[in-house]
Image (cartoon, rainbow, N blue to C red; front, side, top):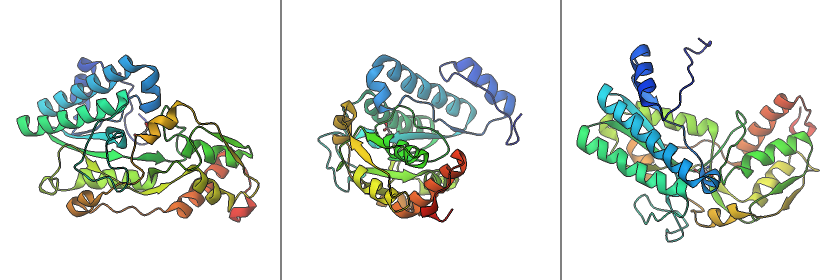
Length: 281
Ligand code: SER
């Protein structure tokens, strides 16, 4: 038992244990966040497919059997090089080039299938890159946008694995959590889309976030050594049209680049016990 409630470690591939825990705690909702992200998935394709798909099937089946509300995170990785890159529409071409993206677009359709066939109340958003101070990134193409803040606060230079002008859609963690809870609390009649909603916060390039950080950490420098993740990023949108989420359940992000930068730097300065005079602390 933690201060926030009970805590258990569970392998999402272990369906019988999942069932036991649902029964033990009388679970009514599942936020199914376990998955292998885009860059890691390219290194371990079969494992990524197994975890992302079997994990989803296990929770979909539990949601059906126990009448649970289910959250499934999809991703901008469902889009690909044939998708319109600017203000990517809700309904558009989805021909992803990563294992992760293929698993997410298949997952979206399985979610809709379970809704149509069994009435499972499953809800989903296509997250862009999520930026937060709470945890270190793990295996995504958008990870640079978290790493860059850690290095800036630690007083180190940063080497970015994407090109300086690679614009991608991003979302600050506070907005992501609030928006996800709002989606899950909306009345079922508001949820018109049972595949997955486009969800946007802000878009920026590595050069732009570097400049935003330099406002508060003047000596900070970034070098560029693009690797295989640059190619993944190039297949994704640079900005997202999320009007369906705004209209259906009132989605609206709060954080812009400067607000996000100040919040990230101040929390990480506390974490690393560092003074940042540029931030007034
Ligand atoms: N942040 C994710 C990734 O880079 C996108 O969903 O893989």
